[in-house]
Structure formats: C-alpha cells, structure tokens
Amino acid sequence: DRNVKIAPSILSADFADFGREIQAIEAQGADWIHVDVMDGHFVPNLTFGPPAVKAFRKHVKTVMDVHLMIAPVDPYIDAYAEAGTDILTAHVEAGPHTHRTLQAIRAAGMKAGVALNPGTPAQAVEHLLDLADLVCVMTVNPGFGGQKFIDMTDKVRTLRAMIGDRPVHIEIDGGVTPETAPLVVNAGADVLVAGSAVFKGGSVDNPTPYGDNIRAI
Ligand code: DX5
Ligand code: ZN
Image (tube, rainbow, N blue to C red; front, side, top):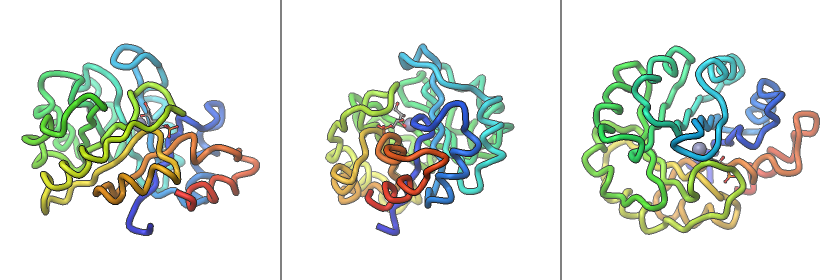
C-alpha cells in the first residue's frame, strides 16, 4: 500500500554496523528510520542514547523517528533535538506530565509522538491530540524485537475516530508482518514499524531481502 509508510527498526540491524545498515535499508525502500531508545528502567532492555543517535543521523536521508522507552523523558528532549531527531515519541506511561512533554518536544523544534503500551486505553491520549503529530500504538510490550503481535485493532479504530480531521499519524510498533499489517492498516494506521520482519534473511552485504521484505508488508 503506497499510502502506508514503512519504518524499519534498527533494533534488528547489526549493532556494529549501523551506518551501513541505515544506508542499505533506505536504498531498499524504507520510508522512515525507527530508532528504539531503551533505558533498562522503563523497559527491561538497554540500547543507546543521544551520542549514538546523533551518529546515526549522518546516515539518515529520510526521516529519523526516535521512540523513547525511557523515564523520565524531559531532561533528554534537548539532547535528542541536538542529535537531529525529526519525530520524538514519548510514552504516555513514562510520567504524569505527558502534556508538558509534548509541548516541550515541539518547542525544541521536533514533531511530537505519544506511544501507548498494549494495556493502556486510547482514552489516555484523548486530551493530547492537539499536541501530537503521531500516536504510536504498541502491539507488543516494549523492550524487545521479534515478539508476537498483540491485536490492538479496536484501539486503532477508536483512535482514528478520535483524531478526526487532525493531521496525526497512527504508527503501529511490534510484531508487524505481512499477515498482521492489513489488520491495522484497515483500522486506520498509516505508519508501520517493523524490525525482525524487515531484516530477516538479509545483511549489509546482501540487502535485497530487506527490499523484498519491505514490499511484502
Ligand atoms: C519494541 C520496539 C519495536 C521493535 C519492533 O520494544 O519498540 O520497534 O523493535 O520489532 P519487531 O518488528 O521485531 O516486533
Ligand atoms: Zn519502537
């Protein structure tokens, strides 16, 4: 579907070769590059922080979509702006003041995203939609790639109705495959994050499977 953007998650890339992985995945048709930041506290896994993200930026020609799975968020917003982030997404569960966080993200010159864990209802972002450019619906419990899709189709449909005519993306993150993608796209999602389903079977030296996998979603 040409109206749906595919945002490969570099969580499934070779951690010793991010620059070439980003170049390869963009050459193979990625629309955005999804960067999963984990702090070992908000989620039970640890990835990388602002200096690494700043280094990724040099290789990203499309859109750098940074998903923060960290708490707190606010002390790091300026560092992610400085790193060249286009869209910065914070979890609604990461603190009591998501409204303030989204304002601060925009004030720092980035687009603002808000993410919801599977257990969090759509209503948690109802009063944030004028401050958000993107709502990320998690279809796994965040922390790891390669998990099984949790069906959040009803939540996506509710959010799309709630968003109405606002220019807000609905992004799906976790367990996206050629089988699960149509469910959420039909419900109103327009950005699909995919890690394992995009990187499987390929490598920086053999990147054609990346493109085949992207087109299969
Ligand atoms: C999960 C991350 C996702 C994940 C997606 O915590 O936010 O972006 O890497 O990976 P797959 O597509 O393998 O579920
Ligand atoms: Zn993510």
